[in-house]
Length: 193
Image (cartoon, rainbow, N blue to C red; front, side, top):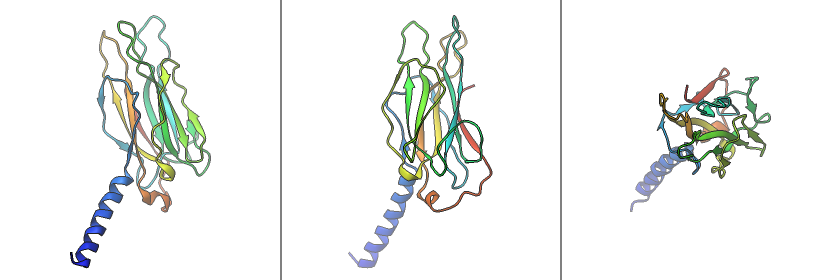
């Protein structure tokens, strides 16, 4: 093979693979089984997630519980609320607390989430305590997380509602490690009502 053709093919293949790895998907194996996947939502430009907040339904006692209803990524270190990584760090890994199917009893599916920051700090959400914590996802490493997609069950009317069942994230592109973020504070959300 001609060396210039070999070099060109290597460059094209390398660029394609670099781009694909830049948006690597991280997920967990214990998500709930109900619902459909929503669209991916990403932090703008070259920004990345440094924190999160949750939408959680309080226990309904005699009613239908849904527990975790939504997850919001915080895409700027200037947002004063929600769980945030220490300064200069990013969300890079997560795990879910999920209640398995309860048969004829009330199902809730996803109940809480815990993130790990690039420096190792753990940020646990303020969700419910039903179910068990699953394994950690793979890590995005120093690039951190920038995209979220959630699996949500639509309201069932008189049936058993679960709301948020599962979530996956995508890692930030490699260029976020070297480019400053001059974006205004922002957020991206995933989840149900």
